[in-house]
Image 1 (cartoon, rainbow, N blue to C red):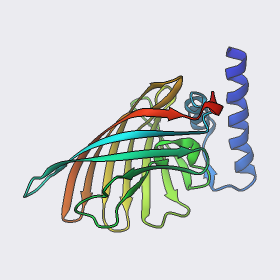
Image 2: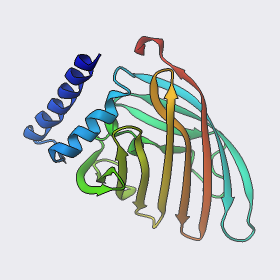
Image 3: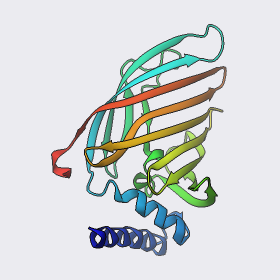
Image 4: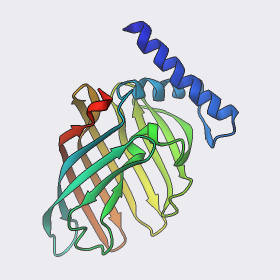
Length: 207
């Protein structure tokens, strides 16, 4: 098993180095590349899955509303990682889908320019700049080699700032989010959100 892990990690890291040499919009020192490779090891072979999300939201100003939203998540490697809200957000017309690709480093190469930004509390810190998502300005992500993405700070062009914390767990042998909490500082509409991810359905071909 150790030989297999080492071989896959080396291949993943080698792929990252190859992308650098090929001019891909990515640059990470060896240590941070190893962190990303180690974190990715938990989900090697994972191609697609779906899940259910229960999201509790609370407005942080008058009228202090609390409400629940049901959602469904959908992941396909190298393509998308989204949470679709059943009825959208009642206070934000048109917001029906949330992009979760920032919490999965395997989704970064074709979506973000990312850079190593040091270490904090044992986690490697990365800064992300969007390649295609023009609504996002910049983001900072903390990644643990053991438990994956820990938190995300993201700033958007409309003035919104979001801080997310992620807790992941073993799901059928893969490392996947169990809960996600967010503080959303949306102009004139700050709120808190706590989501529980459950009922994962993993494509049998990935096992």
